[in-house]
Amino acid sequence: MSESTTEGVRFVKGHGTENDFVLVADPRGAWQPSPAVVARVCDRRAGLGADGLIRVVRCDALPEGAALAGEAQWFMDYRNADGSIAEMCGNGVRVFAEFLLREDLLPAGAGDGRWFAVGTRAGVKRLRREPDGRWTADMGPWRLSGGERALADGSDALVSVAGLGVVRPALSLDLGNPHTVVALAEEGELEEADLLHAPQVQPEPPHGTNVELVVPLLAVDVTGDHVADIGDVRMRVHERGVGETRSCGTGACAAALATRAWAGPGAPDVWRVEVPGGEVVVTVGEGSSLVAGTVWLTGPAVLVAAGALAPELVAEPVPA
Image 1 (cartoon, rainbow, N blue to C red):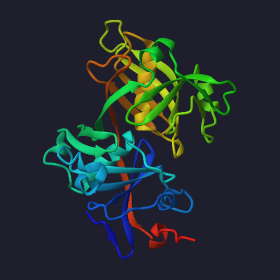
Image 2 (image 1 turned 90 degrees about the vertical axis):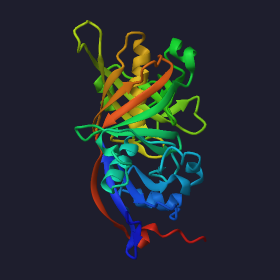
Image 3 (image 1 turned 120 degrees about the vertical axis):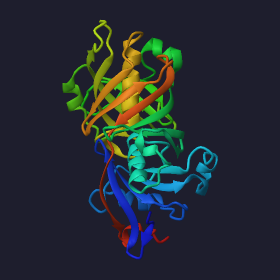
Image 4 (image 1 turned 120 degrees about the horizontal axis):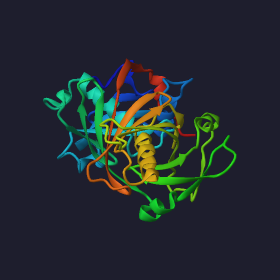
């Protein structure tokens, strides 16, 4: 795993349903990019272009990862495109796993369907590679931020989205990072929404939030028992610190879980989530209620390019 050369910092570019990332191998945690450098690298005109930057670091080389080193060898140090630090990224962790596979850094057998652990700021996440090449990530615990009261009311926040005219009720979820999900009545509204501007959320979350707009589509009875087994929703997302992205893994989980909560008892535990960049599958963990539980995310991860970031691109700003 090459870390850097005299030409610059080595990188790999990848995406999960077109949610794209720059990955940098930094096993010893030697490279400490400032927010300004991360933003420059992720800039789509002046830099390489990405929704975020991921450092691949050994858990024991980072203060945030040291406590996880007994469970996981590698830590996903994720930064949003504006340089801000994020807790987790559901698409990013699959691309991270694909990078480890390509670099032959997985534990023995982990590329053949066995679970292995990755450290993140949202705790340890476990992944496995499916026979078709997709990755499944055990995203761990989730909860409705407002608990039973929010479930009963159907919402615990109000969201104003440019292009939609009126303020909409929304449901807040915690998946290790914050989400606010807004249900829309039809696909036309989903297309009309302007997510170039950050939606306004009340009450304002102290650390910001990702905002998902979701339209329920279908519920499918696979087994023929007249009970819906698979739900189907379409989603767009404005990511905190990034803007609108083609996909968001934790956001897809939040969209499915919120729709399931609105549907009530008997709602499916498996959901197809259509995003502008493709499709992922969300599976609610056994024993989960409508308020809290665990969740899995399955989707593709693709590595598309490798090279070196020019020294000028990663040079730290000189203090004035």
